[in-house]
Length: 170
Ligand SMILES: [Zn+2]
Image (cartoon, rainbow, N blue to C red; front, side, top):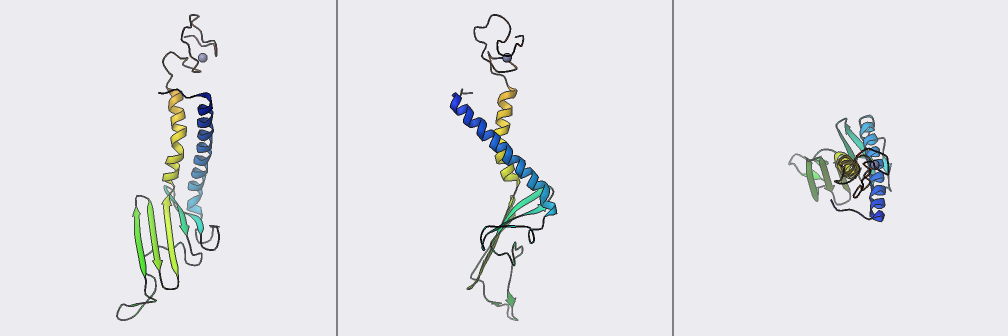
């Protein structure tokens, strides 16, 4: 593995700590999700964008939706259907995706309104934020050849048989 300069190493360490904190937040959100009701507990960023949590213990999801009265909306058809099967008001556009690979999406548009809901499993951000901490752990767990097993100090040319940094017998 290529060696990093001190400046890069510091940037990587900071990014790793931030990743670890975000991973902790995701785990807390995942643990809280089964007790939260997205119709009542939501974070509203403006009148047309809301964020909530929804899910079973092993499948918590982040929910994004635009309508706080109906949303998050799950299902297929919304509207009034007459005897001939005509919808009033008729849907101009409908997109239904998922549940596929942890993603669920519904989009409905009428002449006078739009309703959409997007749900994404918390596993995606959890995996993304786990990458840097796992790499850090992997780099630490595997001592580099010619370096101290404990502290990683470079022992090239060392003849004392003892690491000058931490005192470990080599
Ligand atoms: Zn050492």
